[in-house]
Each structure stands twice: as C-alpha cells, then as structure tokens.
Image (cartoon, rainbow, N blue to C red; front, side):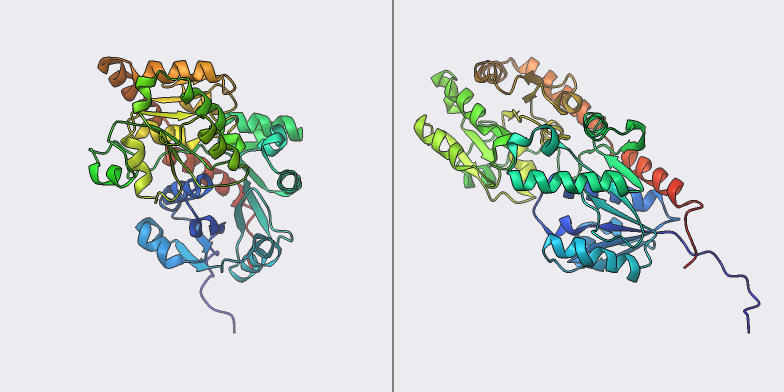
Length: 388
C-alpha cells in the first residue's frame, strides 16, 4: 500500500577521493583539506562522502569534518591502478554518489558524473622535468579527464590558460579554485630554539627552501648561487627541506664538489608540525623552481613572516605578486645577488617585505575558493540529480 505521506527528494551527494590525506604532506593534500573544511560548512544542503583509508584520523585532525552533512568512509590504501580501476567506481555505486570529485585522474570506468581538479599540466609544457613514463601516463590521464569530466577545476590562472592552450578548450569551461594557506599552521612563530638546535640551526640564522629533491625544483641553481655568496654570508646555512624523489644524487654531488657540505643542511623528515616553525625561523626563503602549477611554499613562507625570492616563470609571479623578489631561475649570478641583497637589507626594509608578504598571503582565501567549488557543484546538481 502506498504511503499517505509525500516522499521528500533525496539530498545530493558529492563523493571526494581523499586518499592523499593518508599520505605525506603535499600540495594536493593541503588543497583538499583547505577547500573542503570550508565547503562542508558553506553547503549544508549537500551531503559529502570522503573516501580515505583512515576516517578517524581525519576527524581527529579536523573537527569540521564531523558535521551532519559529512560521511567519512574507509577506502583502503591500495595501488593507484586498483583505486582507479575498481575502488572509486565501486564507491560511486555503493554510496549512491551523484558527483565524484577527483584530482588529475578519473576512474577508468566511472559509474556517474565526475569533477576533476588538474593542478598543473607541466608534464605537457615542461616534460624535460619528468620521467618519460610519468609524463606519458599523465598526458593520457589528463586528456581523458578533459574529454570526460563533467566539471573541470584548476588552481591558478596560469594553469587554466596552459590547459586551454594545450588541450584546445575554452578557458571559461575551467573554474579556478585557488590554493590558500592554513593560518592555524602557517604564521610567524616565536623563536624556536629547541627545534632549531635539534637540526643544528639558529633562529633567524639560515636560508631555507622547501621542495622534493627533483630537477624541477632547481636546487642545482640555488646551490650554485649560494656558492657565489661572499664568505661572510655563508654563516647563514642553506637549509633544504624535502624528501628525495628522482635524480637527487646530482644535488648532493654538487654540494660536495663545491665544498659546501658543512654549509648545506638537508632535512628530509620534517613533520607537518615542524615545517611551518622551520619556515618562520628562516632569515630568507628561496624558491627558484623552474615551473609550478601554483607554488604553495611561496605563500606558506610569506604567511610565516619570511622574505621570499622566487622565479619569474609560470605561476610564481601570480602567487607572489609584488611581495617577493623575482629572479630568472636559470641565472645563478642574479639569484646570488638577490640572496645577498635580502640578507643584508636594513631592518626597516625587512619589516616592509615581511608585511607585504603577509598581505599577499592573505589575498588567497580558502572560503572564497570553496564558494567557487560549491557554486559549480550546485549548478551541476540542480536538475541533473536523478532519484535513485
């Protein structure tokens, strides 16, 4: 017998591949956490299903996800091929997901609509910085996403234009959800003598960079520039924070051959909690990367109250604005001159640079980006949501 009460429409359900939360600190992980901490609050009319291996850890770390419109669901950590071939599509069906949000790559067989955030297409525009197998696989995955995703997002105007140019699509079809900084983590810290001593450092007494040890991050030019500094400025050690990736041997070999082994400190195991403290204790942050889709370390260092030098290329001028020195990443001499100028600038100029960096970091806001995300979700789901 039919119910005498009218049935209410089912609430739209957005699934999010959140597997990067289970891994190491990286840009796409920060992007998802920052974006969705705001999105779940801005969209109480949407139910969010977060797919990750350790839901309890997510709720402990970020109470915002313990909300009535959130379900954190376990998706076991398995190889990426398994996740793309079976896990995501199974959860699409099992969780009755109306729109699945993924990063870079769609499921091999999708059982519903998908949104995809492509953080960069550097494997297309700068393939020399990637293993050939990775570049080929990434090209195939991104082209499939461009052709089949219902919604497309990226993280900077630079990357939106690069995507439009490479894939011959209208840039208006790509929404920009900018990265921002977690102000609870990245902010100026008071002197951290104990932490610095653990790494053999002195607060406000070193030059810092952050990034995986791989060719694209351009550690080689940075080391060459550091070698050109006047001897008196070598009292500021060069601290390189980042895990080994590929072709990292050349970085260590250059440090040895330049006789800088005692002046360069490699920190590969800095924790999520230590990283912002180490950033804020630096005299200067240098990020001469050859190419970035966004370049979050630039913004994070600014938010920590540290003067920044970065590259003139790709997205870095967009992120840094007028708050950083911009240098050709291939010019070691110019980079050395910029480092020397910043290490010897007056206290007044240093204060001005720090204040400018803090303002620039504040221009990027997770709430603003989350509104863009949620608005596009709603536009897609309105009228497109079928009763199942």
